[in-house]
Length: 389
Ligand code: FEO
Image (cartoon, rainbow, N blue to C red):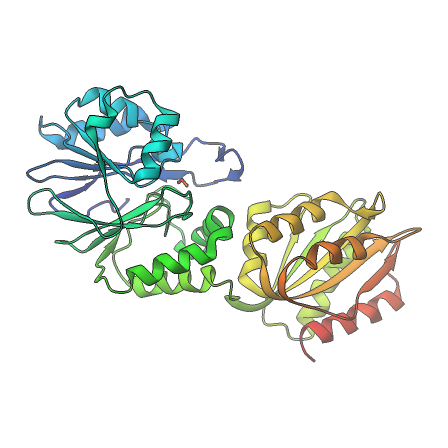
């Protein structure tokens, strides 16, 4: 059973999507995703965000079932990405007297996505700190640029102390999924918002002065208890600090020999007492989870085959992706493999050089085709160095 209760006047009208293959056409979501949308019933009826095109029909039903035959007076547009904004045009047509609330950037984007002829007479432009009153309920707006698009704004309902943080505090998985929040929220955060840590930090600072009793994000469960736990996770993630003491071993192997090396490295690290060792085969395992684990732990070991005078592409893609997400403040060890002219190590170093505050281990391991006793000794040295033995 999903818990979608908020209060008498604030109603969840979002939709669970259990059949989507890839969220944003790139993320596997074994437990689907929710497109959250909310209705505040008051003297004026207010909808906070629409839903993805995949959920239109069910969302409209949810809205109609809760309006008691009344009209929608205001639509708040927190974020223009189509998983939330797709139905703005439809709602404007359905309720011709409805006002649309956004900031300057929101309306630039609305004009790009939709032709709403009378938009100029319907728009309500809000700025940082503005408050709109709807009867007993009022929303205060805070701009949150790049969390996750430039027009994003969050709102705070003053009477019930509810924060509507747009994509912030979102999570993969439908609302009826029984699973730990942190794992899928972390995978969501680093892959979707991870590049914008500075902007998330700025938003967290703005929210410091608010008393928040509930968090109603645009994806994932409504958060009602232990809010300090979630806010603390966001503080750690957005400041790029490692969350856990552990080593993540990421491997990119063509024929399996480098994979054997990486698995041996996992064994060596465990035998030497590493607190936690996580592993991913970048050629087959979920890429988004590998990105998540790289950020989660304080140490990273990369094991990759050489390829075309470079590094085998799954590793190149992984490192470039980490760099694009501002990966930093980690200790990294390198294992390369090559049969005639190993090139993977240099290629990996070149990408890592562009990252901030990386402590690169001196002991780089070079495997020639397959692991032997000498290479195991080198791997032991690298393990000692990365574990500070
Ligand atoms: Fe859930 Fe950035 O959209």
